[in-house]
Image (cartoon, rainbow, N blue to C red; front, side, top):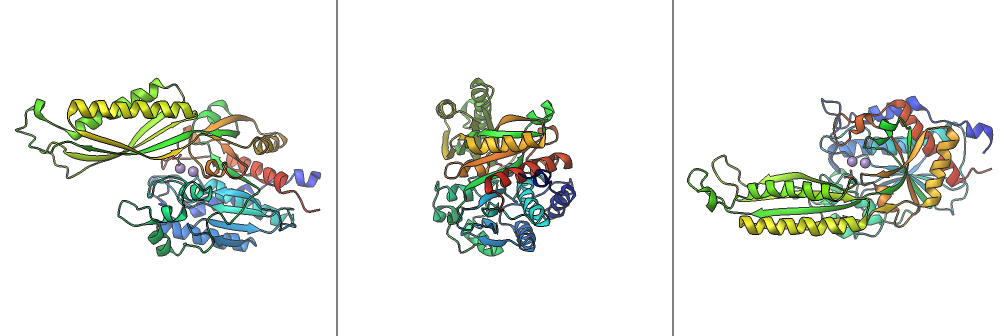
Length: 416
Ligand code: GLV
Ligand code: MN
Ligand code: MN
């Protein structure tokens, strides 16, 4: 690369402004963002993103699951674009950075190349993947999973939220059911910048995480059927209390996961007691569980142990426990050539760094099964994410975007 190009840097202030401008769509009083996928705030941010990409000279296309692709032309349009991006939806009490940083940094890369009048050889494509978070519709990362062939488009369109609204209806309501078949947009490579969402980079004072692996994930829908009866008159030994059984199961899951080593994690994140009342013994409840490990065999062992614990607790407490695995995502190993490209860009830019495994799921983890993919992490304050307090510094966001820029240039090539 010529010295002028190796000196090229993104505009840190412009990226920071874009992050804060879009944080208004679904902004919460505590400084976070509530922008559930395919809701009205998601439409607002999508409209903003579309307009910004078009203003930057990109052609924006939308696929049948609402994923947005903004193409910046390259010299050789016969080449598949280098994909850059992440997602713009958030958790119910999410922050300003999870997903948004990677999408807006990709836009910033395009804006920077425009300002410097640089044409790449291969085109670039900024992606905003639908429903990365998975809190309104399960599973998480569903559009990239369909892109990778893990689900059909029809299967995903039929998924329902808690109100019974389907993905298809939600897409139509906000006008983002595009015409392109899912998977039509090809990539020669895909690179996603993201905050780490964990504590390692900050603790070690490192600016960049060169992500080489991602944890595997298992999601479960659970149900416990006991027997609802009078809280004052039913003797303790005769009760079939669904909530008491649930409590035992939550602690059993916690113990099982801890017993499977330092890298396994497990969470019971949602519970709904049906027809709750202070003086009725809980009869029925539903809950969800999320279990992760970077190792596939450990996932198998966790599945066996948790299923056995559920069966044991159900038998002893005379309640029916069903624990259905609704999603399993195998651990990700990112493409060595791309990981090396990220490492080289990071070293060339002089940022401190370390190799890192992603604890969170990401669209790049799905894409990795069909496209050479890699990820770049930057630190976030106290490792906090999926929380309105999520925070990151302008300098670290800019560093990550610069690594994204130079990785993209090395993959796409410069057209002269
Ligand atoms: C995605 O946000 C995940 O749950 O890792
Ligand atoms: Mn994310
Ligand atoms: Mn997230």
